[in-house]
Every structure is written in C-alpha cells, then in structure tokens.
Image (cartoon, rainbow, N blue to C red):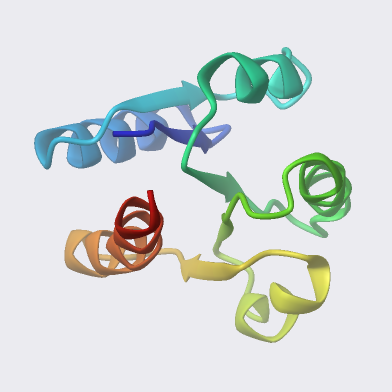
Length: 123
C-alpha cells in the first residue's frame, strides 16, 4: 500500500488527520512545512496520494501542485481548505479534488478512498 503524504501547517490537525487515516490502515507521512524537502519526500516515499492544505490565497500551494504535477502527472493531489471558494478554484489550480474544512471523518475517508482505491485497483 502506498503512503498518503499530508501537508497541514497546524500540527494538531495534522496529527488528527494522520491518526484518523492510520486507524483505517493507511500509511501516512505528515509534513507541516512545504519548504522542508517536499520533493525529496515524494521521491523517497512514492506516495499514492497527497493531501495539501490550501492556505489563504493558495499561491504557494498552487506552485507546489504544479511542480509536483510536472514530475508526477498521475499522482492525485487534494486541496484541503477552509477557503469559502475552494470548490470553485481547486480544479483550475491543478488539484484533482478538494476537501472543505471543517470536514467530518466520513467525508475524509470517502474522498481519500476514491483516490486510493482507484490507484490500488490499477496496480
């Protein structure tokens, strides 16, 4: 099973997301700073999915998403955001899907499963 790489700057929320996904059998890699070797982590762990906090204007996250997609075009990246308009902007920014904050765990599981199950069935 491939890991899920999770970028969330809030350490408490990062821990909750990681624990919630690990309780369901997923391997997670938590990251709370995008400038600490994101691309090296992707290359090292070959994740099957990335959850990326889409903070404020999202410009930094959009740039990272584009860089990742250039090197790994089939790697799904989900925007996780409390931005009111995330449903309108995630696709045009290069993300495959989004999860709006606040979210309940069932929604998190359903969305993650949509991408991890698709990947694992192909392998």
